Image (cartoon, rainbow, N blue to C red; front, side, top):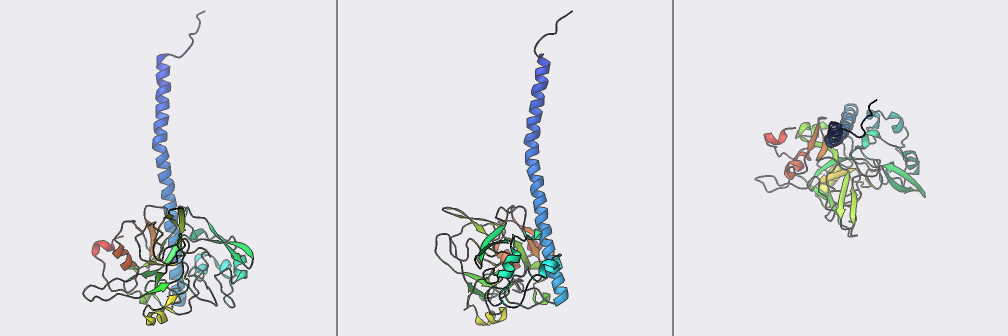
Length: 345
């Protein structure tokens, strides 16, 4: 009998090498593709989340003939716009747990009942899966540590002043807004507008959105990290109290307008006034802070921010978009026209 030769033939070695190279090539192509597909799925979920908010706002308007107040005062820090639209977003049971008399319904330090019920509650549509921020804010409620979910989305209160061409006049009024401490410990006030779609202590309907619902920004992503010399700090609008919190400011939007920008506002949560470029990470600027800085920039885990327009449509704005265009979109009745190319979705 003939003995079998030991070892592999040259052909067998070449086959093994070829298979190994094909495997490496498949991994090199497949890994980025898998990451791309996963991020596309997360992006789609973020868009769907904002669609849910859009349905909630429109259904609320159908019932009450007005847009929900962006932030409400209630014997202290009241509730955000996200609370009254809960029944319109399939959260009737959660909404029924709220008490709208007595102490505040948003600030856990002043309403232990709500804080304890809201402890650990997760609204699936309030978090973008691309966000790298913590899910919860840890707060003290009557000596008890509770967790309130941090929202990945923020209501748009407007922008800082834009000069009306040919008049030299501002298109609207902004107000000094308290309070935020920068990472370096230097407190600087930002500004808060009452000329956007979601503003504090307001009662107006879609008719007040005279620029058109399709040209007015209602909500956007705001969930990312700002940079300081010592590391990173979170950019979002709901910390340190979570998605429940509204404002402690007692004046209405119309009263503030009559004040002509001379009022120093109290804290406002879950709203932002557009001042800075989307995706900006510099913390050391007025109105920007870890937590609920009134002028924290729009930011996300994507290459741009997903936003909800007043007509319920979803748009994605690149970080390098024209800041003036974003400011125009953030105002409901500034009277400043967008160029045709700026209206495209």
